[in-house]
Image 1 (cartoon, rainbow, N blue to C red):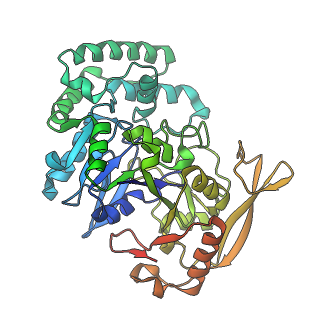
Image 2 (tube, rainbow, N blue to C red):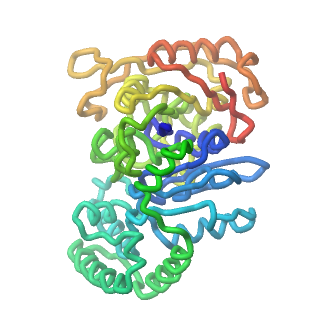
Length: 423
């Protein structure tokens, strides 16, 4: 059996959690392969809104097993709060949720390091969520990290103490005013670790190998977005992991030739949280309307998202990097009623018109070239079939499909599970 991937194609916040929730009924296993609790996968059904940070988005279905892969970094404190939020919904997560022993742990001092590093940058800060994710990945690549499997060893606290001492020395080096009570933070951390140890730890690469041999269907769930990939994103304003398709192989221990379909998720417009270049960003009332109607605030951070027109140059790039086979367009309903829609189809770059993403897309280097479209006036949120779509929406979708040369198979017309239309 093959593995399907589900990825965000922009700067995150595309609506991946909703689509995973919709697709879970078709899969035996949902596996998260990278990122940390800066993810905010929002699911809405039965009048209740759920936000998941680390736990895969298939957790609300009774049949699927949910796996946290080795490429994920886990903050036990945040993770336990997620578990507690599930308690009221009678979910047997001890049976349905398993964790790779090779996943790295976010320590209290990682969060402090994150805050100290960001504070030291002043106006040059990269927009970190301050969750300790970057420093955790730094320790992973520096071969200093503590992994979930270490918690099964008696001497793991000795290793923790050595690393925490090193972190405190680094915090002092930054020479910024970071107030904290590490003893209090550690007490909460140790308590959360005890809860974490109640779950099942696995050698995930072997687990997936055996699952595929047994004919199990697997959906790999990404976090953040492709333009935040540490290698292929808008560096240095990126996350600390590989958010693209290749990250699923290294984040789960799955061979590349086992990957079949790649579902790419994108919004009908573009958003970005934090710092970094954004060629199609709008600073007028149109951008403000997108933000208001789309409720564009971070699910985890609460930070307002910057809004702009759909950027096809960037979207083509991420489709190519990921080998996308199917597209899902989110938040089509948000654009209802705009006087005109625009799509960026090229950039003016150093005196040329280009249709590929260049090394540097800072505003002094790039000017977007737009194609305009009439907008639909109808309220899409009540529609439940593609046959109800207004002609202007169909024209918009047809143009995108022609440009991207990939079918758009799902259109989301609202946040609820039921507001998902298959074409």
